[in-house]
Amino acid sequence: MIESTGQLLAISVSTRKGVRKTNVGQANIIADWGLEGDVHAGKWHRQVSILAIDSIATMRDLGADVGPGDFAENLTLGGIDIPHCSVGDRIRCGEVLLEVTQIGKECHHRCAIYRQVGDCVMPREGIFARVIEGGRLEVGMAVDYSRRLVESAA
Image (cartoon, rainbow, N blue to C red; front, side, top):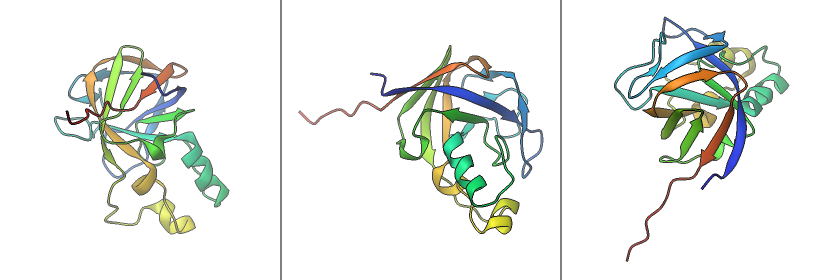
């Protein structure tokens, strides 16, 4: 059951770790891998990183000069309450189906954004997903969010 519908606002990739990602208008996303050409793609549970545009706006309000991709997120979404997603929830964008695998991340080294404004939203408001079904993504596509189905004990 679809909980909410939003929009894919940005797709971002990088070929090196530890840098801001570059916005691209479209990308291939590969099942059980991630975004084609992105350094974080691979056979692990954090194949795609996702952040809400509202989280980026929060950082702008604190004085950070940031935009989509600056938190090293692959997908920036609008209209989906990303900070309140749970592990197992699903996100569909066209042919692409993602399953949330991790909420937030530990930030071992304070990033440039944290040093600039004293905070960073990615460790607590970013999410990570694995790719269940791959396909082509384009900025502007609709995104459907569904909560995981919880089986009741019978």
